[in-house]
Length: 245
Image 1: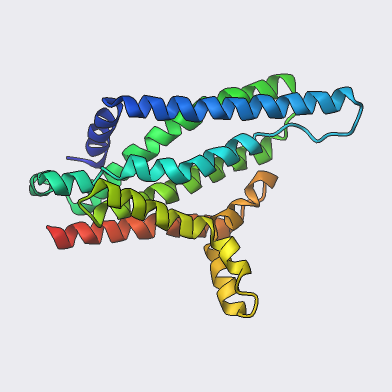
Image 2: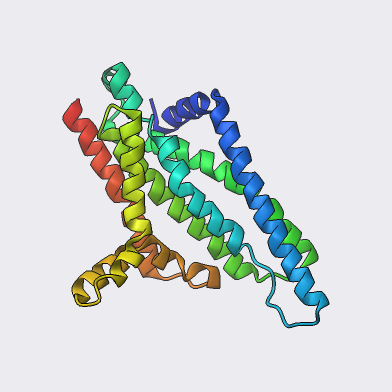
């Protein structure tokens, strides 16, 4: 059984539940409201004759990252926790499949679900491109930032799901792990007397590494951060599966 087969299995299980469609509709509904509000403000400013920068997708994509804080652990909480609780993880691991393939397959399924929702927001980008004059470079890096952030959040959620048999515990643990990285920038500001702690928490901050992408700035440090944020939890989840085998 390959990584792709495991991902397909999880996607089928996910879309067999109405919650998958409800979550997607709710996210896209609020993204649409935010986009419409931003476009209305842009048009109003133009009519007033005031200088205004080209419209962007930053508000929509910023909301997408924010809502992912709560949605990603909900999507991932059952991936491994349910397998442990039902005992099907032992059956799965007796097949010619490695622990790493199981983790990557489930991770890929959750990411693909997110990408399907994110792809729907491209309609708003097409509207801006057709009727406005957006800067495509920052828009592309903004979308890349969302994908990287989602991959990191999903990986943390998969790790949380690997650590427990309870889906509720997996959700709470996944949310806590994601919030640590999401709020690290704010935590860093409380260590004004300790420069080392300030630097550490600033470097751990997901928002800090996302902040440059809406301006079209993509650095090797930011790419390395998101690579580590994704790879490290997946490796830990794989090791947890190996110990439980």
